[in-house]
Length: 438
Image (cartoon, rainbow, N blue to C red; front, top):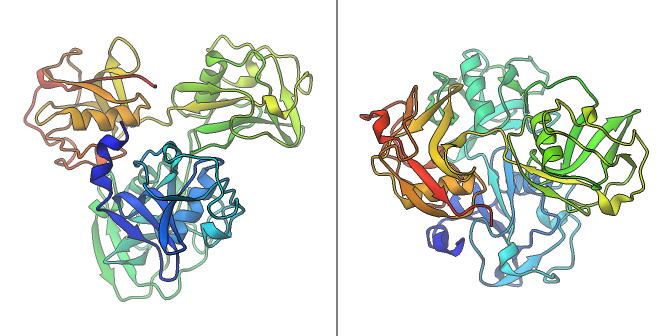
């Protein structure tokens, strides 16, 4: 099914900064299959140990914006020639993926069905922050990065930036000098209404004046119930990975004895990461190094934190790190399926400006449905449904005349009118039936 849309990907590839030997083959300048140049030919990267830390290095090397997601399983289609890299394990600070620890070039145990990819922001990056969700704001215009001036910077601007890079909502948008100053960059003033999907859709005004840099601190996730801190490690995004909890000043893992979907559901909810898509066993995301804190966890699925579930007690276990538990969550959702027969079918609804709304069925087809199914981790699109097949929604109709190629990562990236522009009623609400996660 991936090869079905690879024809759209091949003509569009972008090469990194001068002197680098890397390119992305995908739907935009800053998203696609990762390829490196060696021995006069381009080759792919295997997704063994592929993580958001590796993707961060690729985004920086490509002169792209903030890393959004690492992609596995030939998400952007399969390459054709060599597989040059395998078992890449970056710290995140490297200037090139070739400087990260990896097997010798050309040595791998992979097929092209495991080709790695990345999704980076095309138009915005946060610089000099403590993590990818805070820092000094820079935007990409006319082939160059520019610093954003703080003089006209508003909460609406900050909202758009945090949403664009999948970092929740802004805690604060100005901390003068906290993230340093951008030198040798032209300045630009931005003005967003607040409902744009990208800062590139906001109005911009270049300025030759000296200005203070705008900054933003995004939540990266919503506040959760008070309990031992929890994190997901070594996944492809912040909502997948090895489960670790913090206890007595130290991070430790969770043993996979009795680990199942109810435990995963609590973990995903605690992380503000939507629904549990799958559970992972036997150190799927790699083994931890320190304590194994929890074992024999048995949740009902309704607990607020994983520590609220019955378990042996902190540090009581009969496991080693080869049994570390993991989860894959849906992520803070921007799309959902409502009123279907299972989680992979239903009326399509998208989140915009804090409100869920429907999609009109004008121009709705299987390529649009494919984008939804992929975003939901629901396999391939079987049918695109029209005429409120899954019942009529309520409230806003956010999207109309959606026209996707089929390889986009989100409906927001497809050609379409602005949010809220439509000539429809809810009797035209669009739906999909996906194959399910296969």
